[in-house]
Image: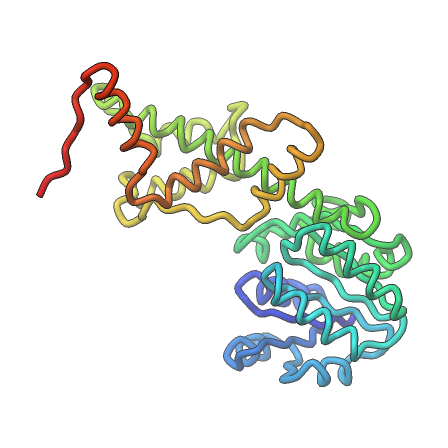
Length: 303
């Protein structure tokens, strides 16, 4: 099956490579030339403009957009909407906000185009292991694209599924990432407690390896934790600054909108904010209050 891939970041390039390995023809486009040349070397048909993509694909076309959420995806979808033909489909494999996805689907429907949201997980390991995909869109369109999803997934009937109409794929992926935040925070806190028990001299990499097999807390995230601790047990080369993609925030917003208690996910998001503070004003104010009411000692800055 022919498909275009727009956006050749590491994940987009890996997905294109996996599709090529599955016998699909891939027309690849990126704003910069380097990634296009690199993917051409493994068999893709490079394109230098969006119009060239249209020319190189036979209708009905399938164009996979693998760009950051927000303006980059919005711009690409709008440009494609002006060039594609009735019956063509745009697949958004990025982390778009599901309400944006629903709006885009309605806009494209008026033009006779289809919009499929494929919430995609797998990161840099997807090329080898396959990608988990939560797909939203119209039944007949998703079925038409089945060969693409089956190739990208870990197996033809595993790791992917059509979860509902447009927007549902990105909604489910949003919740997936919220859960991911909570799992990561729990691992991080547990390992920090063990590290703080200095008199036991625990080897954290060894413990991670023990837990990887047979334990109820085993997971792929634990596998990756073990790998990180093997390379650098003190994590000396890493700054404790943690970004968020936005999906954790959206999950918390949704929980508030639906009156659903989600304290673990909410706390894990807030802890990422804490990681970005070089100095906490609230912590300083807490220290000042304790000093005011109880005369508790304050740790003064040096210099």
